[in-house]
Length: 384
Image (cartoon, rainbow, N blue to C red):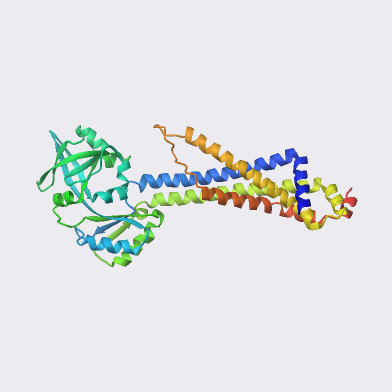
């Protein structure tokens, strides 16, 4: 085997241009594969952040008006699936804000403060002030606060349709990157929302987040089976965004097809070039066999060559991918300078793809290796 390795290395060194062409082919192929794969993952993550980041994964609605005994239901839901990370009772109620001479229609949404951050990561969405900590505190969206000319610690009057009036202190301003939501949603604590809605210790819905958003539909089914409550309706984000889910699945399939096509093209190029290499080295292989080298070692020469080329080409391909990502993040940006698609380096994906490509590159030399294995000194003499 050591002899085959030495000969394989010598063949590579003696055919510098051919070796360089194969390495560049493998490098470009794997760099495109990795970049397209990471871009696909980044696009998927970006879309999920846009859609799911500002909404919950699963929502439980009552078929009548309110959910009573939500404490018991919360405890039961948490036991149904370990992927459920947060279960929050929520009270939503339509009302109006009065500020001096201005009146704006709003949607009050009340949470327990700890649930608010686990569901929406609200601390990272607040650009001024803080999150709610006490009763009769609220945070408002960017557009609504600017329209009303509000400042931190200002007081606003919330008026309900039945004429109830409650003074609430503004403690923060958020930006969910959705103007429609920023214009209407006022977030307060659960008790304040319950008092405004007049529902007592009940909730108008329950919102859940999971560690696996893609399987929110199966988790929702498990919850529905576990609760066995015909008075509840359970929805998940995938059912509410079917077009988006279809688009993401289609994009993933396209990404896989592109990666496979690139890999097949790279493998075919290696097969053809290695096949030509065997023909070019007929005399050398014939002489080596006449000198006593075994058929297995003669075939192994080309497998070793392909393995070395695969390793070097893969390493160069990873380096090229890094350059692609740097260029993409620098030049493909939105108006505020942030990347349109946030590409996240997935080392597990890169390592798996590199291993697959090295194996594919090595196996690509299988047919040329068989040709070398079967070649005899007599054939070389016959063919001149």
